[in-house]
Every structure is written in structure tokens, then in C-alpha cells.
Image 1: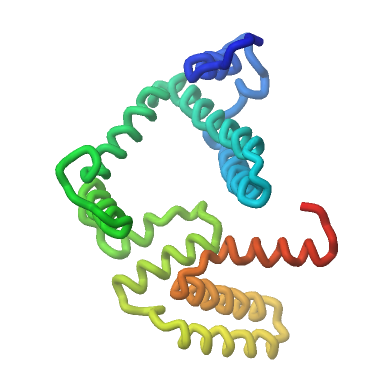
Image 2: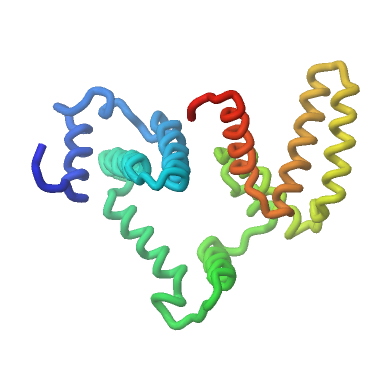
Length: 233
């Protein structure tokens, strides 16, 4: 351990040593696939760190969790470099080029004086990068690994845009109400499960149309429940 602060390059060497033949047995065994759940968990812990910062003003947890996410990036990049796929330098180069390309109002001559215009430009440039995709291809490209509420909202947004469906929250309220009544009347477990899915789908659409983040709304409701029973966070 050294007295002065460690640097980006120091950390890069630390990860490389952990993966070296004389390094850590656990780190040496890891693959991109074995680390998938770690990346997801660390990302969620960053979100919790943001919550702690918002509620207490204390930044230590967020700082620590961001470090854990950074470790995942460095570790995946080290594994990829060992496999001859890409290096950490390639990752940094790629994201740097993407940020410059997608911010022509900062690094070029384009104009965007509102956040909405920035997002519009971003989507247009993204389409140019990806090429012309059909609506079906765009929907299929939405990652299956996303949490269900987030993935459902993204799919519904695309269906709304391209097919003009799921556009009215009142219709979704009615659909959810009808499916809930049918679910309560069902006796077969598989039918109850089916109707429960339909209820959740319509609720997701209602939240989307009202511009409410379903993940955050559910988390806030759960935290209120825990406080009711004086369960520490």
C-alpha cells in the first residue's frame, strides 16, 4: 500500500496482476459470462448509493460503489485483452469517439439549446450509426437482460411509435381492471398467472404514458412499507 492516491494506471496494473498466473485464483477463473450477475448487482448498488447520497448527503457509499463498477469494466477489459478481443484502451477510445460524435453541438457546429433537442440529435445520430432498422428489428434489439418493468416500457414505447397502439392510459386502466377481475375469478394457476401478466403489462403502460418510472415508484412504495414496520434500511 502506498501513501499517495492510486491512479488509473495503478488500478489497471492491479487488475492485470490479479489475473496473472501468480494472481488470485478467483479472479483468474472469471469469464465474461460468470461476471454477468456481478455487473448487474454492482450497478444496482450504485443506484442505492445515489439514494443514500440524496437522503443523507453522505457520498462515501456512492464513491465506493462506483469503484466496484469500474472494477467490473477493468476486469472485463483485461479478460478481453487476454483473449485477443479488445483492450481497455479500445473501450476508452470507443466511448470517447461516441461522445464526440453524438455531441456535435459541443464538439462540432450543430446547435442544440435544449435537452430535448440534444436527445433528438442523439437518436438521429444513433440511427445513422446503426443503419436503417425495421420497427421489428428495433424492438428485437431491446436487451432481454433488462429488468422486466424497464424492458416492457421500452417495448411499449416502440409499439406506440410504430403501430399506434397502447396510446391511451384510460384504455389501459380499463384493460387492467378487466384482467384483474378475470384473474380473481380464475381457479387454474396457469390462467391466474396469465391474467396477472396482463395486469402488469397494462400498469406498465399507464406508468409510461404518465411518465412515471415504475422501478422507482415500486421502490419508494416498498421503502414506505418497511418504515411502517420500523425495519431498518
